[in-house]
Length: 84
Image 1 (tube, rainbow, N blue to C red):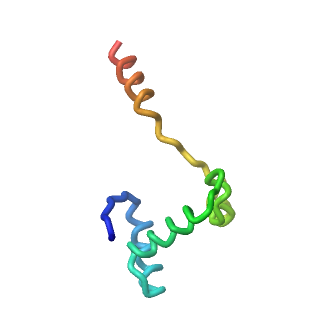
Image 2 (cartoon, one colour):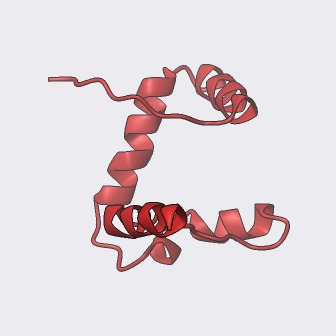
């Protein structure tokens, strides 16, 4: 059973991904599903262990930087501290 999700990417990334998918005769949804299946098919210890990380490092101008979103607790603390 398929389920829908909403993802946000910058416009150029979407355009390029759609072109790549089309060139390979697959929908963008199935391409995204394929990538997620590849990432979750093995137990990788970190994002750096993913097979695509070497490619990302080559393409990224200054190396790759993974940013984690602050926790809800951190956001709440920042909000209340800003009000003081």
